[in-house]
Length: 166
Image (cartoon, rainbow, N blue to C red):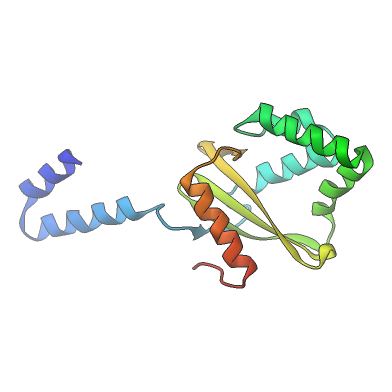
């Protein structure tokens, strides 16, 4: 920030103001949830499809490797599968590929993503999945608590109430 201040001081006049406005816009980028075109560059949709394929096949080891907390995700999936049984586990995650169920929105907040699915066969229940970009275009399921994830959870709640952000 000191370097930016020094550049602005030296530039002065109208160029200083232009630089200030450009810097302010750059700093503001990523601070508010923004819609992303699912499947476009910067979308987590490809990772979501891969994850859901693993889950629909019952491969919890491969699914857990797509998390930023793989051990905890594995344990959660293992416990859920033990609770509902192998076939029900596969059915629950396989339903995301049914024609009446579809991805309806994706939101970005910095490196974090929220995918919102309309599960039409479940009375149009809106399900959310959270991802984080770990390198250019590579995503993992976001299982780590963060302020950004909490803000995206509020976006999901608003979306469910019919108040989708910009």
